[in-house]
Image (tube, rainbow, N blue to C red; front, top):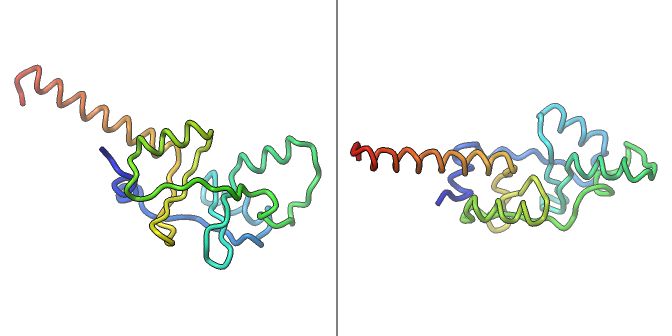
Length: 144
């Protein structure tokens, strides 16, 4: 089973963060620059939320006006689901599917250890399945 730790070793532990007091405009600009769909939101160095494209679009679709200079904390999701390095990618897929989310911050105790996306998880699962299929083909054909 592939763990989140294995996945982070492959993809890297880079996590893009923003302070809770940063403006929505700043957060959106950073997401566009880094070509990412979500940012971890910190308050005094601790995870306090996640801000995603989905948070922004839902607010815009809701028809309520707001200022792009508003703090990102007004739009972020504060009830953040997380993964640990020991979780399996299958565990993460289950969480993401059940809760309809696309990003999971990875925490190791108090430390922010990374961020994984649904794309990372799907790629990992597909790669594992391809490897398993190759092993079965080798076994069946006698190349084992």
